[in-house]
Length: 139
Image (tube, rainbow, N blue to C red; front, side, top):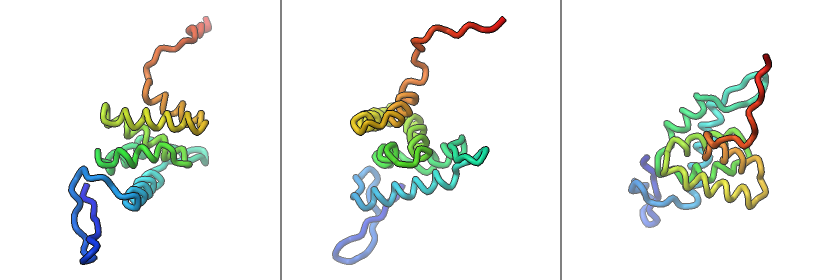
């Protein structure tokens, strides 16, 4: 991803080196940009907005490793579809995305956001064995 920064003296836009941290203004702009991508690719069924594979693919294709801090901030977005899609994309980053998910979960816990905390928990530990006994099948 090539980001642009403005040179203070000449008001000329110069390319930002990959991997350099974003300013708060650039972070907010990138956050809005990624949230718009999610919103544009959100599906609906039965008159309800929802995330689907197209939503996840669109955000995954738009995001790079440089966007990990932005995706982490999107975990706390008031729009649950944006937050869930960001979590799914962070999972796709594997071990690079895990710390962002863990920090997002801790933040949700500190805010008392049980839904956000559990949404991230489900993505961090999708195959955790259930503590509930198996449900008997009808005969």
